[in-house]
Length: 326
Image 1: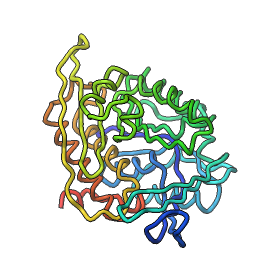
Image 2: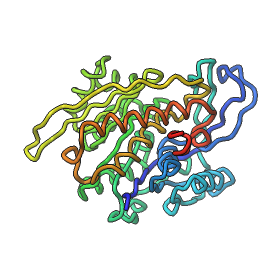
Image 3: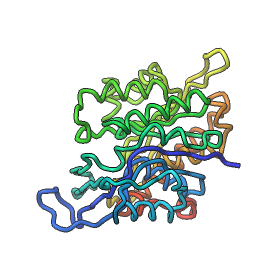
């Protein structure tokens, strides 16, 4: 049976502007479910994978909406529990190219209250991949819970996927972010970054040079999203002695009428993890991979991400497997 892909972290409400422009100039907004790890879980489920989401939601109408949206997408929400705290909100405006402008309302929000004890209650024996992002590292107790989950997964031999998802506005102390993100990066197996995050973490602008630097920090598989230019993959095909070839390549993106780039990166990593989980014994790491699989899975992930940009919102825009393969 295909292993569970468990995502952990924030789920919040995106209020997406009804018209192009900045947050200063737009008028009305439309409600949509969001939060990067929740988006990834929904993407996996929409594509036929087995996913569960771990987090906290407000015991309010917005929290109920988030849980219902995830359940409708096919996500297991047993570990997405309500508490007496407000559901986090994000207001998102898009310019004419589909690029985003954010304002977050997340102070003491429910998703920040995930605790290490919540992680201990997970069915770890059934989990095939753990996926986390950096937003849940910004404040405690969610920070401690995320670090604890990564530690448990590593001790159990469960591959850890990490999306840097750098959002400076969400950090009370942005200067603290770099060290915390590097700490998780050093303990992950699969790392996803975009071009801006690549420069921020490595100082490099070319994907090959940046990937080399990131491999030295820990992950054996690095995925670099390039927006309309597709994505780059780089994998250290390690043998039992820790040596092996470096397999890498670039996959161009299909040309699509872009409406909203919100959630495209989440769709990319969700699609890649779905194929990864279904294609190899996940505990086998890079020794279980074939080079051609990396190109195929990255191509699939790029297509899913591109299709996501043709509709507004994050979870509402995720395509089904039939839409991707049609």
